[in-house]
Length: 322
Image 1 (cartoon, one colour):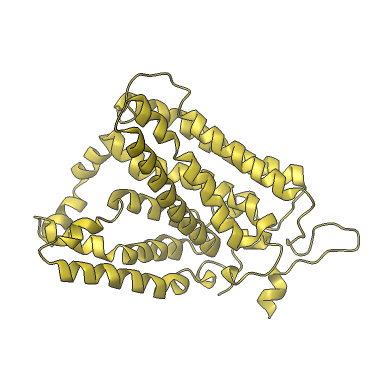
Image 2 (cartoon, rainbow, N blue to C red):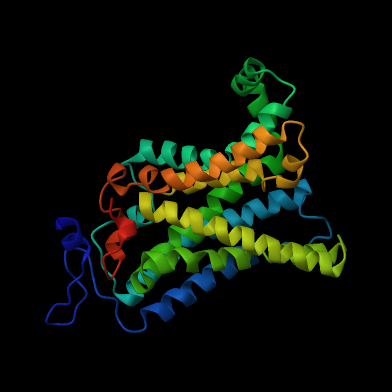
């Protein structure tokens, strides 16, 4: 009961939006929030195309240039949240950095638990990868601990993009900056499913390059775009859920990097695997365990209750409670 009172806003007699850091959203807040998110998404995607080049997106020169522009936009993205807060006169107890998931409270659980939960979901692909890997466990461990292995990874522009820069900048922009602007007007649940729409649409820019370099038929490119939008939207909803439940940016970033490494589960390959029963059983077990552990592993009490972004909700939500 005390938690609900802490999360519930109250409208004071003078119509202001203050009550221990909670508030009632003012009129027009949703329009400002949605437009701010749209402008931020356009800025992120637009930064990828400020460089004119006839080279494909995987060329090291293109990747380096895009690193520069996207890191600048991402570094400036907190200013969007600051400007939104000043324009709407929203005042909250947590600092701007805390609202964006950059804080120390509950940091260790935020690093470990969301990543473990995501690995549980990928139990089937991980089992399949272990069965098909020619290395023994000790061989793989020695490689993972070898500094030269990581030096090679860090010198690979595509690895840096997929495992470091893309997860960090996309989660910062599309989760840490957008969710604090969407939660006050929509509530946590609606924000979880609204935020990924900006994320999914932002990935449509890949269609431009596929068409430009004629990498496939028109129908194939269209189907690929629809699939990518659907997959990124579902994934975006998941990391938005993690962000709201944990109040940390680090968890979504690590899960994003892990999922980029794993890719979309190769279910068709699993169906033809020599140990098909064991692999498919691990796929099913992973999904069931993921659903079982989804709320326990993201219990806000592990990360500091209530999480900073939950102080922005205009009404109590079960997502913000343990």
